[in-house]
Length: 116
Image (cartoon, rainbow, N blue to C red; front, side, top):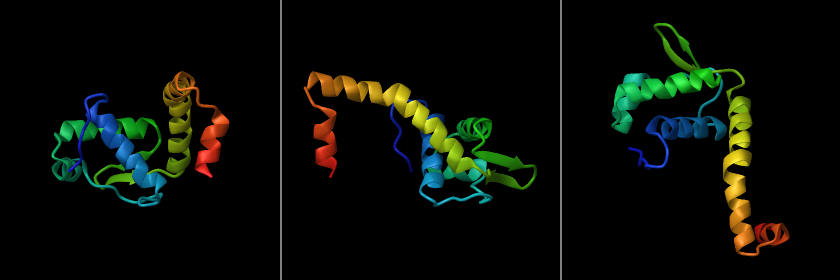
């Protein structure tokens, strides 16, 4: 079971986890993913929430539906995820990081030297 956090809708948290499966190589192009019902049971979540997750992923070209067969990882899913998550990082997360660095008087060069 997943642990969910209040700061973000559950369906988006599930979508992030599924995208991580693609980025890590656990799921690849044309892999069949769990059905709405299967994933709902596995995560202890209402199937309507899973359906919303799948609709979100379909609209972002991460998965597609073969009617009567199930949901599959789309060709180019990894690239789509990277593009979306890069934009999200730059717009949402990086400004917070930069503000915090500024408040703490941390220079980017200090961060890079710590990472080496």
